[in-house]
Image (cartoon, rainbow, N blue to C red; front, side):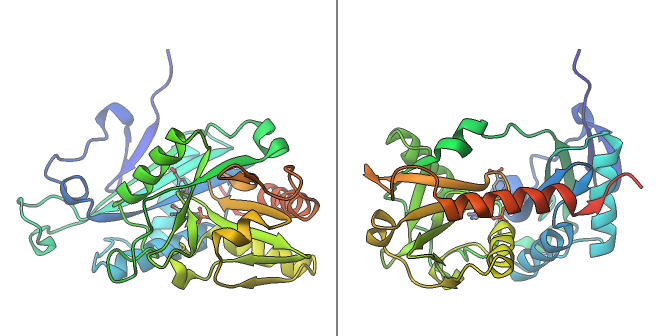
Length: 294
Ligand code: PXG
C-alpha cells in the first residue's frame, strides 16, 4: 500500500485524501492564482528564496495577497518536504484567490488558499540528456504583455497546455512558442538558449519569456566559466542554424535540443558547451540550497 503524502493546506499538514479545495475556489473557477515549481536535491531546496520572491512578485502583479510572510512560506515549504521524509523531488506551491461567490470579481474572495505539495518527480530518462530533445514550432503564440503577462506564473496555463498538445501531435518532445511578432519567446515550460560561434543567446523577457530561475543559474554559470552570454531577439532561423541549442526549466533542468521542425541543429548531438553547462548545473544543484534536515 502506498503511503499518502502530507500536503500543506492553509496552515495544516493533511494526508492527501483530506487536502481538499472548494469547487468555489476562484483558482479553479477562473484560473485566478499563482504557482511555483521548485526542485529539491540531496535534502536541499534549490533556489528557494528566488522561487519565493517570484511567487510574491506574481501575486503582487495580480493584486493577490498571500496571507503569510515570505519567511513563513519558506518555513512551510521546508516543513512540507521534511514531513514527507523526501530527499529528492519536486514542490508545487499554489496560491489561489480563494473561495468566493461565482463572478469574476476577486474582491468577494476574503482569503487566498495556500497549498504546498512535495512529491517525487519522474525525471526525463538519462537517454534524453545524452541524445537531446526534438522540438516543433507550434501555432499557439505566447500572449503579449498586455494580454496575459508571461512574467506572471499564473494558474492560466491553457496557452502552454495547448502548445504542448501541438508539439506531441507533431511527434516532438517540446513545443517552440513564438510571440505575436513571430519572434522566439520560449518553450511550453522551459526557456530556450542557442549557441553560435561560442556565444550563448537567449530571448529577452520582453519577447515573452518567463524569468526562469534555471535561466538565471545559466547566466551565473556562463559568467563563472567565462562563456559569453547575452539576451537578444531570436528568430526560428537562428535556431535552425545554431551550433547548439538547450532548454532550461525546473522540471527539465538543462537539456540539449537537437532538432526543430525536422532541421537538425548543429551535428544533431548535445554540444560541447551545452555539456559543460549541464555538468556545472548538476554540481550546483547537488551542493547548494536551503537544507531540509538540520
Ligand atoms: N517558461 C515557462 C512558461 C515555465 O512555466 C519555465 C519557463 C522555466 O522556469 P524555471 O523557473 O522553472 O527555470 C517555466 C517553468 C510543470 C513545471 O509542472 C513547469 C515549470 C516548472 C516546473 C514544473 O510542468 N515551468
